[in-house]
Length: 531
Ligand code: TNX
Image (cartoon, rainbow, N blue to C red; front, top):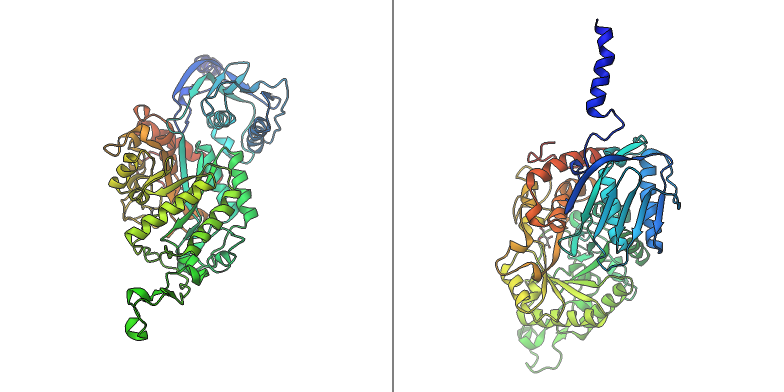
């Protein structure tokens, strides 16, 4: 009896589930992070097979690169080679408007059409499509074609135009390969600005040809006494290009006038000298108080490998200091196509207030003279901000209000929400906790436009999540701190807060983890996610 019934049972199951070649999920069930604005399901599915091709409608080297990027991703996962051809059923179409980051995806039985006015929008469409594919798309060779992609449409665009992440390569140096890995992670999440913290007390990480000792001496160490390192100008340009191909703009930071010990160890003449005129050495030297040589014999600072900061400062009254800043800004600007240059400006605890104001105003002038918009940590708002320049809020509400009061915009990086060097909880084996313990739901549950009283969406350029590296020494540790919080901030920056919901986010994260396993990512298995 049993053998007679079983074929019928199989047939019946096939009928209700439309058999295995049909998609088991609809488009709206796909785990897409950041969540798109609008996802509509339709009947049927698109069959992506060995012979599916990619067609490019619109010109430009960028679109072709995006097409081959998609082909390469599918190729790596499945072992097949998707051709770029006029017969292709996956169509990349550049449309003629000027909403460059918005995109749509239309999946039918016959075609998948990805559309955007901008190349970046097409790149985002490709990233979304990759997330709609089975998790094996993240593998080396485990994706079996054909696969069914559920039909439907997606219409999407970001809430904020600046969606950034920062890596601190000054406290611990990260290789070019590690930086590219970081950029790959950012690109999948539609981040578009990569802030490089290139200098601090513990290390100087970018070659400056007119001041070679910066890297020779200042680049030679890091927190804990390791050998440090630096990027040559060629390597920096390689990073800038790698980022640009992924529609990510590099924002270089030289932190000053504090956080400058590595530079001060490299060049004695940048140090504040002993000021005879204010009487420090009068009793020793018996020089007359009006003696016309206020600065003598500055000594180079010692290299520093600790964690505490706030003890260093440039000599703000020396012309040489501004010559130095000018040279550094000029050389970096020449290699940086993006609109921003970050001057740091945080925690200058040993710079006199007046000196700080004078320095930050001149540094802004220099950056603007070289055609860039200056960004500074929120302390810079205590000086006169030149028009268009930006303050990056990290913790002082008053400073953020000062910036907005001057008519300038802010980038939102509240340490309590976005600092990925903060421990998840008191047991996390890496990280600090001076701002907060930040679990995944803490990183997710906040709204940039409502976070500070008096700061609204129109005052905000965007959102940035930094990874400071005092306690982070290598790629595995970097991954542990950013996975999954870099996903949370990606959605905070991209998806309107009215559409965001932690339960939905955490169930999408749990599905993402399969991809992380395939990529060998060392992620934090938060108890706040049902893995
Ligand atoms: C504060 S945030 C700093 C950094 C540290 C970080 C550690 C900011 C502008 N300054 O120098 O690396 O805390 O969490």
